[in-house]
Image 1 (tube, rainbow, N blue to C red):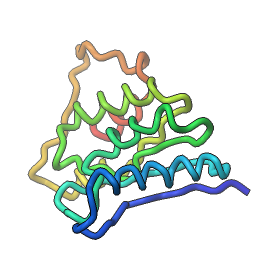
Image 2 (image 1 turned 180 degrees about the vertical axis):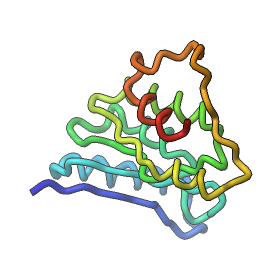
Image 3 (image 1 turned 120 degrees about the horizontal axis):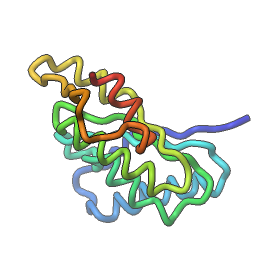
Image 4 (image 1 turned 90 degrees about the vertical axis):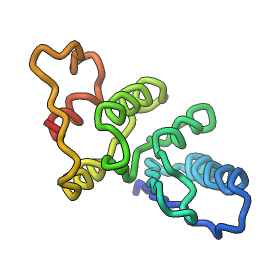
Length: 144
């Protein structure tokens, strides 16, 4: 049986921010050591108790700390980030990781819930070659 792990880290606001981030990193490295197959990390920008405002930045901090576990974005808040930047960060992280990045469709669902955020549609003549970056076709197919 394979096990996956999802965290939406919540800590008392009185705790040291750096300490809570290190604790959350250690939890995922422990999951890797215990043989978990996947770990997903959520993000929240406006909640002081949830200490991860960017799941991609947090996952990047785990690149040299994990060996087998497949990392993934549990959530992402597209209304708070430009979709092209999210796509670029996910594509770069996908290349940096030792295993494929699992990018959750949740950010795209959240974008649909925010009608004030217009979708980004790449023109056919866009200089971005989706075949050159594995994560882009998936993101582009849902955003466009």
